[in-house]
Length: 119
Image (cartoon, rainbow, N blue to C red; front, side, top):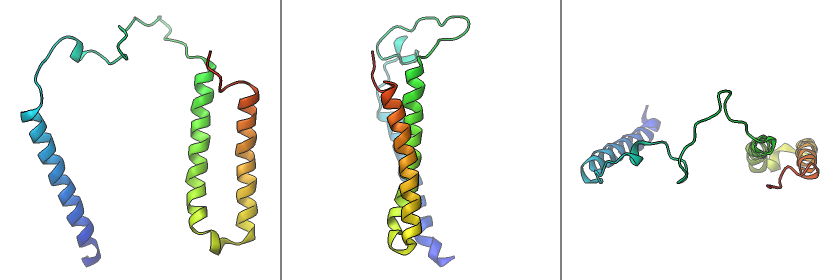
């Protein structure tokens, strides 16, 4: 249990600071309530009612979202590989090159389809 005591101490300290911040913000924060404060935030534009079937998003929105997920997953795999690069050997190097090539092919596909250009 003794190796976990510093971790528990830091967690208790973080919880204490969190509680103090919440309590202080409720007492010290501004209390000017108005109608617009309780509406959904729409970047300064008045919200419009959605069509009955729901709003349609352009396909480019989904392409950018998928690109983000692909490159986010690539970073998740690249970081541990880079940390233990010396112990992995040549096999891991070739595997990572294949992985990066597939990600690069997906990027080229989206680029050629003009998925990164906003009209």
